[in-house]
Image 1 (cartoon, one colour):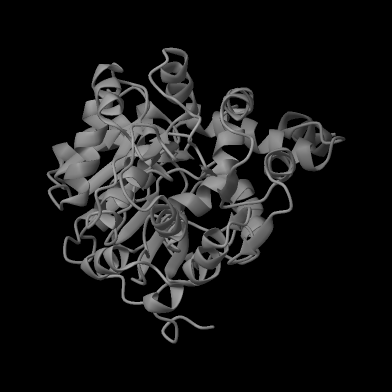
Image 2 (tube, rainbow, N blue to C red):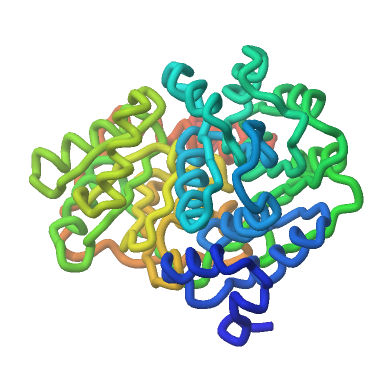
Amino acid sequence: MPEGTFSWVDLKLNPQLLRAVADAGFQTPTEVQQKVIPLVLGGQAVIGIAQTGTGKTASYVLPVLKKIGFAQGKDPRALVLAPTKELVIQIADHARVLASHTDLRIVALYGGIGPKSQIEELEKGADLIVATPGRFMELYLRETITTKMLKTLVLDEADRMMDMGFMPQLRKIFEVIPSKRQNLLFSATFLPKVERLAEEFLLFPTRVEITPQATTAIQVQQQQVHVPNLKTKINLLEYLLLDRERYQRVMIFARTRQVATDISKFIERRSLGPVRVIHSNKGQNARINAMNEFKDGELRVLVTTDVSSRGIDVSDVSHVINFDVPLKYEDYVHRIGRTGRAHRLGEAITFVTPPEDYHIERIEKMIRSRIPVHPLPVGVAVEETMKDERQQQDREIDRQKRERDPSFKGAFHESKRKRA
């Protein structure tokens, strides 16, 4: 049934949840919500394959909140596991909004800060826990979490969990929670490692796939711009950010912490912000504050590594700029999914140097579509490629050619053969 012909009332949510949905401005349920909510309310195990920005979080939070009903006792009855602190905070905040007309207690557990305040929250009672696997097990072993009342377990961003090596921790958690429970698994992709997890974790699941795996959101207009070197990337970035009217709220993704920091400093020097940078070396409070400032519109630019490719839910990000092409191709989908959310249009621009063209080809193969190539704007100064960078590019291109053709000997051998 297409969106717009289906109402929230059709999903048989209780009045408190319907009021919260209306307060949040959700006019009609999205496709994933239409399909998943009845399954969860019916007690079925579910595998949900859906991109970020499709309403996936509400598709499991709403029915879980309805099943819990009201605050009762001290022990949690539902558990959501997510791979990162940022995602845990985002899910918990979303759940609190949807539970705003109930007395349900939602507790977020994550590392990076001391456990004292989280233990104090748990002692007051929790109905729904949202946690990273590591912090959950840490507090369980301290005997501050009792699991005997858990009836629902949700694994969100399962593909990222597998990438981050959480399988041993997940197995430990499966051992200490009741075996008789409803299991839900959500992932943007269903790669073999996620499939293996699903086989171990789920019994006779119903699979809901909203879009083909690794498909980009249709409301995101993508483009790639080819540049010869790093300095030209910087010039292009400055050229774009000078247009404040168009580039109102921008996320910039870099491959490394150092590059992200350098970009942030450059934007600050050129007065193109306000800007903040977040990456894994930043303290937890600094990262949370930066994300909140960005959500509240106090920041124009947020520069980050892939630590935030799945950890920010901001409905009006006008542009995502991939300063570097991600080497982990699934991250491309998650990066550009930060814009074009909640039925809004967004733009994603990727800067591509000669060695990065190799990775763009593979990303296009993965998403099964071409990323339109846009010319470098006339006003952008094209810098000469420095010797060190040229050598580095040549070595990387040689490596790529050897990967395609193991008999390839490299540029030096090629030039020697030509001379002969």
